[in-house]
Image (tube, rainbow, N blue to C red):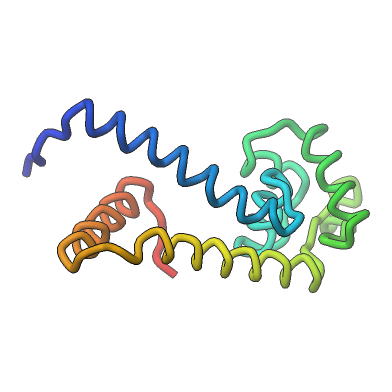
Length: 146
């Protein structure tokens, strides 16, 4: 089954708005003291579970030394703990602390509230269209539904 063609201008507008949306949500985190990189790494740890340094670096698309510095800073802030990664004592396992988990979940609630506020003027038809687009993106990105 073929899908209708999406105009290049619409794709460009969507791209522009997606970037603006991410920046807006990043500001919500930054207003509460959580930088973009910290929020992103902490999100991986809270929602995917404990990670090795290599796994976390790969999830964030950065090199291990960069992630190592970030993890060290998050540890100093009491957001994560670092310990042995199982049988291989050379590997480390990064776990969010209770404080880190609370901070991430509160941040997620603030971001969701900010999104809801942005969408509060949607008509019923726009809300259905958004649900359709969300479904398309979940399928296209292979995102599991919670």
